[in-house]
Length: 214
Ligand SMILES: C[S@@+](CC[C@H](N)C(=O)[O-])C[C@H]1O[C@@H](n2cnc3c(N)ncnc32)[C@H](O)[C@@H]1O
Image 1 (tube, rainbow, N blue to C red):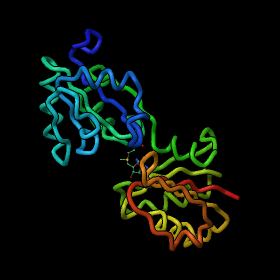
Image 2: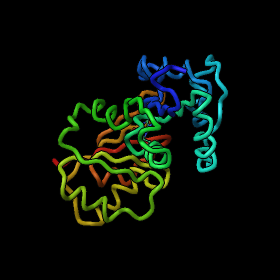
Image 3: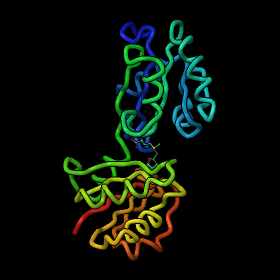
Image 4: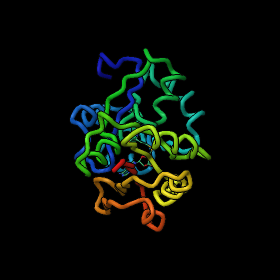
């Protein structure tokens, strides 16, 4: 166990998908792990790492209790997609374990990559996630009305087309939509459209949407 990480759980940001986006510090920490916890996709990124690999699925509440014990004898590293401090289960882990028991190594967020892909700054943007959320359309419309740029995490239910439909329903028309699918992966696709056309856009895989005022 690296001395500075003694008794700590390390939460590592693994970036948007492509391994090249993972920082050297994150890779070093992953290589030193005794136990690696993560989704199937993230665990698969590290076939050569000689750690016990534990799949994180819907079992996370039970798992977090086990991790709380393991951390005193083993180096536990939890893999998170993108950046741990941006809409991830790191929030829940830190809340349950306490800030002093966790170390977070940042990663490149899908939202950073999306803004880079379309050449827009994100220092003047507002962000929200519709990933796994129900009926947050009022909040969505409020954000779009208030901010010139909104970065949104989507999912298979709250797709870019559904988002466009909800914004149009509120009477807002004058916005561009950037759709950033499967960022950094071989199936990456970046497109720009108006809201009316976006209603018919079919997407697949993970996507980030940026809504921008004309
Ligand atoms: C649970 S959130 C995790 C966000 C993550 N912590 C981050 O910083 O990117 C998952 C959502 O992130 C977005 N996402 C993650 N990876 C992506 C990728 N490679 N391309 C496009 N969107 C991605 C999608 O909106 C997906 O539904």
